[in-house]
Length: 63
Image (tube, rainbow, N blue to C red; front, side, top):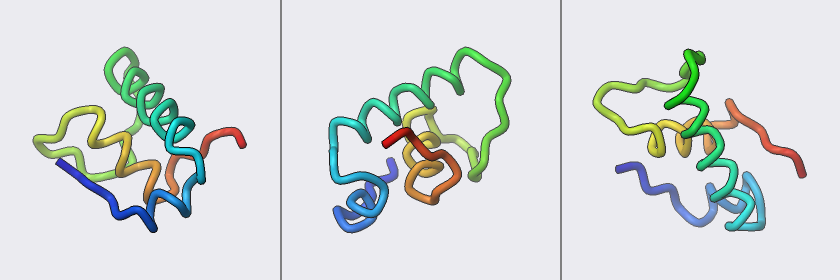
């Protein structure tokens, strides 16, 4: 499982709750739709993929 550091999370958003919502929404998109995956997805679950995409800046939420 991908566990980002607190500094990585803070760069994305100061609100851990908003980040959790972003991850959940993206994970649902990955599960329900045929969408492009922006990170290496080998043997990873949708939540891990979503977290990596958000931390790496591929997915940006509303502020």
